[in-house]
Image (tube, rainbow, N blue to C red; front, side):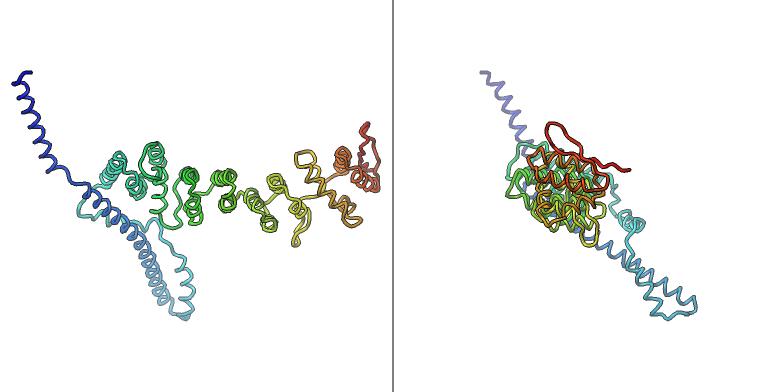
Length: 417
């Protein structure tokens, strides 16, 4: 209620208002100016990347011409003993293999050192990082993402920057900031350039799949933009298991990743789950590193009688990857016993003598193991199959029939004299 105090306070507010108006004219510009500068910066960075590519191309051309010039000088010094065309032809093969080495980058560094602005590189990096922080804190996540993706020397293309975007849970727009960051990384990179860190690839794929952008993952994989790993393939496969309508696409992508990483058993299993039985058999027999354990892994992951039969048969002059006795003895003691029983039934119902030939030629399974197989057949209510196996074993030289006790199952033991 004191007029003098109110008048004094009014004077203070008017002074503050005038100060703010003055700052607005001298220190601030409209948001449009900032938007225009961001656009210009993106154009400049794109031009810089194009110039880097052109520079590498020109460096290769310079090395080729220099190599060719040295070849001419050497040819003249040797007295031109060899025809020029023949001599140059041999050198052209070497010229085509030339690449830009790290030492060739000194010429590029010279241009930076001759920059009239004489600005220190570390100062440029600090300014660049500060600009990113300002964009990020202002909530302009898309601009911040592209700014980070275009950062010089990749100072912001790392897991630390990723964690910044990942921590943002409240945002405007349809896409989460983390996905914007990965999109910017992929768009700004040259074709065939992979992410610098394996964890970035895993996080990027997880983010895209969580938001149901399988087409993004497809583009990244086909353009070789990701650092492949077994964990990356597992994540894509698990997404296909959760989303059956995407299973085929996810398995195809996982196969590319597993094959590139050398995880052959999972690459084969991904094909098997897609119903590509013939393709799996060809893939397995073409890879000599594929072991018997790998075959069992594929069969456990996707039980398939046709594939099991193919694994026990020679293929295009190669030996069978599995023996019938080995796989049946293994599966009859696991949850795959039905598959083993079906294989034995098919062999038993085939032409006469097929089962006997299989047992006689099975060097990977002993008589004891076949005797155990016969015993399991009896326990699983397949007495005829049990008797067939027993009869064949008894016909072998030195075979003796042994009783299995109350169950009445047969067991055969080879006695080698």
